[in-house]
Amino acid sequence: MSTFDQIITSAAILGLAVSAVISYLKVNKLWARRHIKEVTESISVAAALLSLLTTVPFLLKFIVVDRDYVAAGKFILSLAVFVVFFLVGIGFWVRREQRLGIWRMLRGALATERGELTYLLHSFARPREAPAILKILQLVSMVDNELDDREKELLESVALPWGIHPDDIEAAGMDQQTDISSVQTAFREYLALKPSSGQVEKVFDLVKFMVHADRKVSEEESLILDEVGGAVRAYVVEGDADHDVFEVLLVPQSDEQLEIMKAEVVDGTLHERAGGRALVAGSYFSESFARAICLRYRRKHFFCTVERLTAEGERILLGG
Image (cartoon, rainbow, N blue to C red; front, side, top):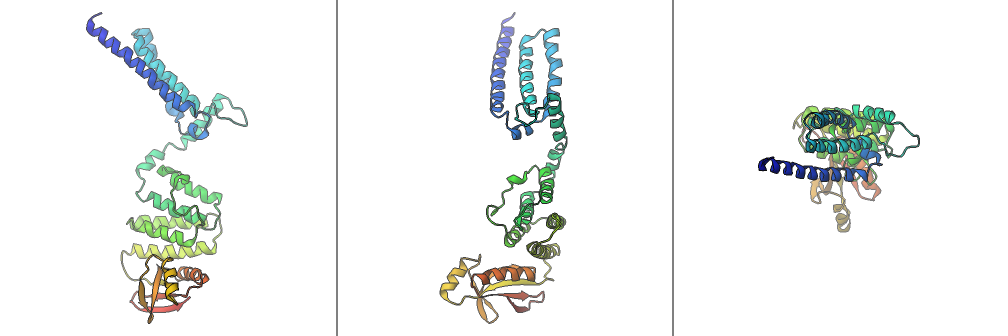
């Protein structure tokens, strides 16, 4: 054997040793979590099975035909890793109430994976507004403080093809009681992303589906449909002022109350309204929604009223 061949062989043996370390690190990371159901579901059994089938012919070639035992050793390591991934993927070490054979575990894993095959393809078409859309749907589903199974299924049918699990949606305020104002705020933030009109209309359809998913429409959900529907109509006409707007006004009765009111609104500036000065607590597309918001402030003993700004620029004081 020449010096050059000796160097190449030594480098191959060294590579085999490094491959052994890499294989150990891969298996070691997975081994400690082999009994966790979520970990098993994250492994593609089909890919592991195909890797097993494609590795064996090469292994036989290097052992029987080429007698290249260093290369064969590399494939033996790969084969061992694939076997471990395969067993973990079918849930071999997951604790179950009922004992299952390997064949049943394999069929179950492949059946689950079959329903997930298009997730990656769908993710390429995932819009940049996806998190905002899912946040809206999640808030709508919880506005009645009850997540129905049908609502959950609808949420998952939208989220999972985008590669997002509903549990991972970061919705501000979800740790608190969801209300109509949080939905309206989320929809306003979504529109601020400047989505296409076609997408906005489809999102509104999803909101309507979510509201009717549990086959009952609460008063809060009805208010949401009115407000979101108005926002969609105003957005689709692209700046056309041919719609009325309803402002919720807080009228302070003292300097002390003014400071308290400022803490309740985003804009703490007093505006000239109806011959007086008031804080604008919010601007809405639905009169019923604006009145519902106004009623909340009245429960805090604030003087609150609703003013209608018509498409022609006329202001009409409506009261609470």
